[in-house]
Length: 191
Figure 1 (cartoon, helix red, strand yellow):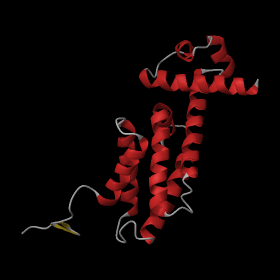
Figure 2 (tube, rainbow, N blue to C red):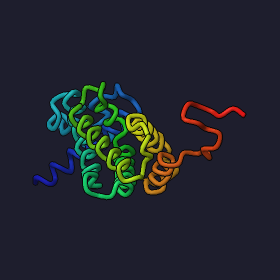
Figure 3 (cartoon, helix red, strand yellow):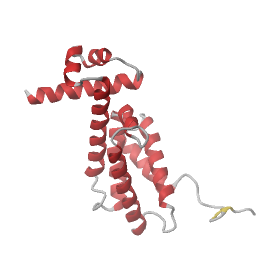
Figure 4 (tube, rainbow, N blue to C red):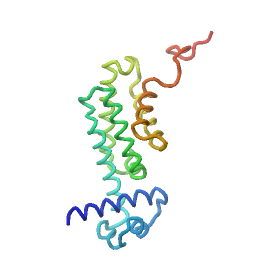
């Protein structure tokens, strides 16, 4: 019985993700219809729209955190961890884009999840720099925001599977698209 209830909740949350992504003002009835359950079933599991949104952001936060955990960023070699986190996070971001928007630092969702992931990312980037994966003079704060932006773009570009997209993200983070010629530390070199 418990596993049936858990599957029903999961089905409702997945339907809510799809429906709210298309129409953030969607009703609980629309969620029930998309989930293939009675409206009373949705209301029995979630007392209000706010409760449903909280549950949606909580499941996305848990899966996002689990995606980072699964890469073992504190112990896995930094390059491997960067790649594995990217693959794992892309999968979660593609499954829960609406819910993850609720979590962000200004989204009012479980901000602790965002703060913990950010702390772990900072640590991983320091390890990557110490091991020579990132340049010794790289600005890690800048690198982190570029990494986040690349993952965000790759999550929206669905023509690539997560593994291929992760390869592109990590390659872009580490190598960029330029040759590096004609640059100095202060800007373009003018001849």
